[in-house]
Amino acid sequence: MATSERRGSTAVKESVFAWEGKDKAGKIVRGEIRAGGEAVVNATLRRQGVLVTKVKKKSYRSGKKVSEKDITLFTRQLATMMKAGVPLLQSFDIVAKGNDNPSVSKLVQDIRADVETGTSLNQAFRKFPLYFDPLFCNLVAAGEQAGILEDLLTRLAIYKEKTLAIKGKIKSAMFYPVSILAVAFIVTTVIMIWVVPAFKEVFTSFGADLPAPTLMVMAMSDFMVANWYIIFGLLFAGLYLFFQSWKRSLKMQQTMDRLLLKMPVFGPVIRKATIARWTRTLATMFAAGVPLVESLDSVGGAAGNAVYLDATKRIQTEVSTGSSLTAAMQGSDVFPNMVTQMVAIGEESGSLDSMLSKVADFYEEEVDDAVASLSSLMEPLIMVILGVLIGGLVVAMYLPIFKLGSVV
Image: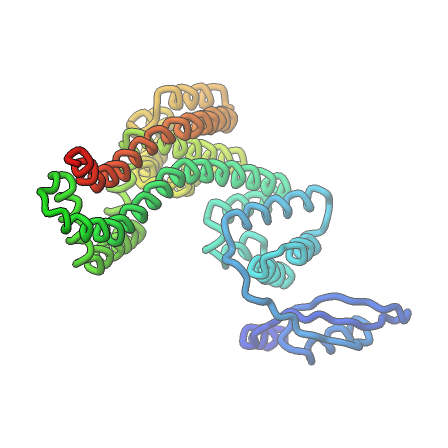
């Protein structure tokens, strides 16, 4: 009987229904239930002694995509409620109802339905790998096995908050110059395609030789006006292919990540951010009681850089054959001396997770300082680039007018 019910539940698509009715005492009660149809809702509630008066299927309107920030907030809310003693299923209900994004509410309800049917929490999370990576699921599994799920969820929330903050700082450091350069490109395009041809019509009536800079700008403008669709087509197609190959090709990722680390201005900031994520991830996994070799499985991918992923695989191999973590990290040639020395102290004193957390804190502060100094450095540099580019075009087009004025 149980087997046939289980088969039927997998065959029928379940939905969430809001219901209203009266209990045995005649008191009006309301709630939500996940079932395969209204008939199942009525039968289930009838067995519970509820006289159903209204059943309505809940429809989730399409919402925004579930972001990393949404998952971080969900983790923090779940950890806080479990710390406060709220039952797990009730915690899911509170989070689902209180979230503004329907996509997040649906995700939480789906996880709740799995947990309600007896699935462990980490297995319920593993059904949604797009939102919950192996690191997240492994830590939840460790918390369930050790009976310290609320503590592990708190650690996870802190880890995800710090990781999200450091990613945000890197994005903000990159966004300002990229947006300014994009605006400069648009302004230059407008000048070359619409403004310069208007000046060219005026200059043809002068009947005099034009300066070399003006002739060069006019030639460039003629080329852009005649071939703008080819230029923009190749540009956008090239950018699309570049980012797609970066996203899908492992070799391209390794090459680009290696180049990013060697960039003159942004390279040191990216390296510090990567080290901060690497050490923070390993500290969180190790503190949760996950063995070191298993922890390194998740650490490389969480670092977000193919160079450090390859280095982590080599470190894992050496550690699994008996080498110390310090020796393996020194042999990888991607960690500064300060990091390996702190790890060595942690291994000797038996407080590796604490030392790794201190290293992560240090490098997160370094990233904060580097981003602040980058912002102050980039502003004058960008102003110079814009002045030379836009100012050069304007001066080149006004040179014939200045020449005409001197003749008059």
